[in-house]
Length: 459
Ligand code: URP
Ligand code: ZN
Ligand code: ZN
Image 1: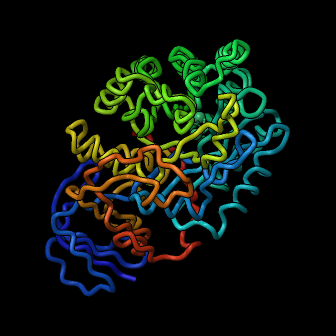
Image 2 (image 1 turned 90 degrees about the vertical axis):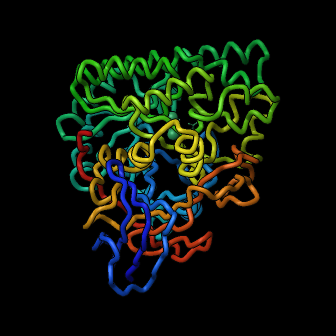
Image 3 (image 1 turned 45 degrees about the vertical axis):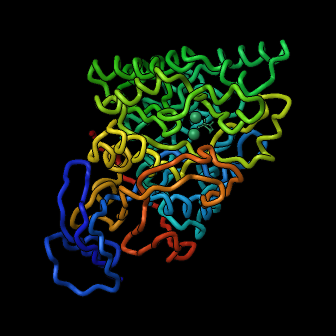
């Protein structure tokens, strides 16, 4: 299959120019003005932006969590991602405490194999670090291409590790050339506040928010960064939501330490006032919770100042019946919200169109930086000769409305119902195949490929 994209405005993390792109097989083969080549598919991109496919490094597909499973699987989740311009996702394998990393890998692999539309890679969450697990780290990096090790400082009893385990893991990952990532919130403080609210009869979704004050995140982010500094391991904090966590990241970066920060689209554009509406607020029950307007402002500035490198989604959808398990008790509401399909368009509309970020910054934080940090650059995350032909053709002017009625995610509500968005992904090309063409799916389930990743690149 060959594709010729004519006359588009090509944007990468560092370039902005108008040219044609010719792809053959899975790769970009030619870029130039007025290319005179025949192709199976010709796309006129005049007036459109032509950008690298989005990479969402934080999604949870088909994940067992809080007594249920996230409602998008590899099929529905990666297809929805393609509709919204994301061509590659990185999902989280969760180790079961008491078991090996490899057994968790095999479970996740069997869920994903043959089912994905879009490309996918894995992080491995280490929830029980011991001498046996230590021996598996090198194998994951060198043989499986899983170079990022996720840790949780919360969700005690299921996912959380203590600081002793964290330090041991960091040393091993450092020696093997990987990166440690973290959900940085103080689990014990949160558990105390949750129990207190519950015992005093405060059970509405609002108390999910009030049980996770900013300090629980800033404290854990600082502690994690200090442990990473002490061990010398490259580090990455997922889903930072607040000014306090950002300040901890900045302090660490100021001492010339590699600590990357990811935020998510929801923390940039939604705020905690959504919890003030009885049970409806369950739609946004996630951890960390939505924060304040001042936190949004801090995160936007963190992006522009280079302290925050990635905008992801933490896509972890649950249908309304699943959310209803917590109708009388916020602690039973499965944590997470849907956004895999919406991230690229929302960030464009709210970020680029509203003048908060430049087009190059947009590509940097939606694609290029994830590719670099997680060992996929330059075969993904850019438009260049020899790179995978993962390309989106994006109309910066088209206005549309986000709704459960038109989204493709397997979830029966939208966290952004009625949001008016300017900017639409018109075509998505994945490894040279026109995957989505004006809303129509052109590839088959199983086209999505497992991406074996390299060691992290410094950015
Ligand atoms: O609420 C969330 N974020 N659910 C998914 C699990 C996690 O903590 O990332
Ligand atoms: Zn998390
Ligand atoms: Zn997550």
